[in-house]
Image 1: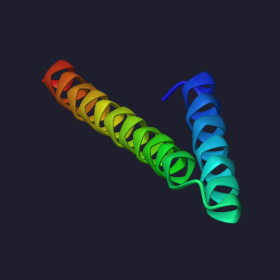
Image 2: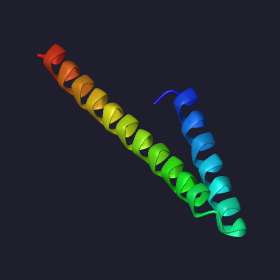
Image 3: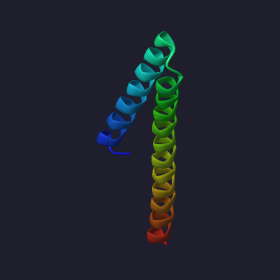
Image 4: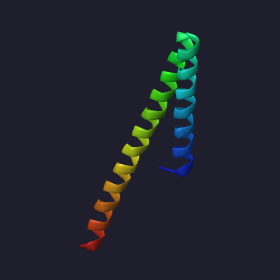
Length: 69
């Protein structure tokens, strides 16, 4: 995963936590839910990027194994 993606996802996650905290502190359930949604989105993006990296690594292993023969 590119470093920019990681930073962007962490920023989104942190922003979501802040929204959730402010929403909880002020009793604004809508804002709290938006924060939880932002956090879930950031986690989903991380999972997709991790899966992409795993597939890429597996493809490279296969490619390297084929080139050895």
